[in-house]
Length: 60
Image 1: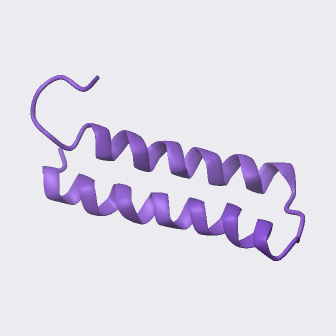
Image 2 (image 1 turned 45 degrees about the horizontal axis):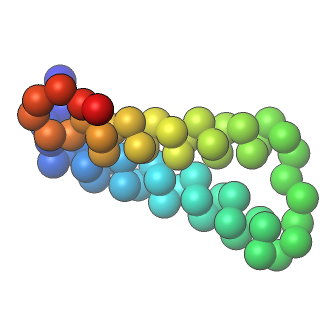
């Protein structure tokens, strides 16, 4: 089981990677395939899940 600090760090990195992929290609007006956008969205969701469950107690 990961510690709270590790979950925060990994979650933040995943959110940064997913956001950079989606926003970076959008700002350059470069279309990305649907599969890549889907993977980026899943990476962002995983990062959010890790951040949300990083503290003790029941997650909302």
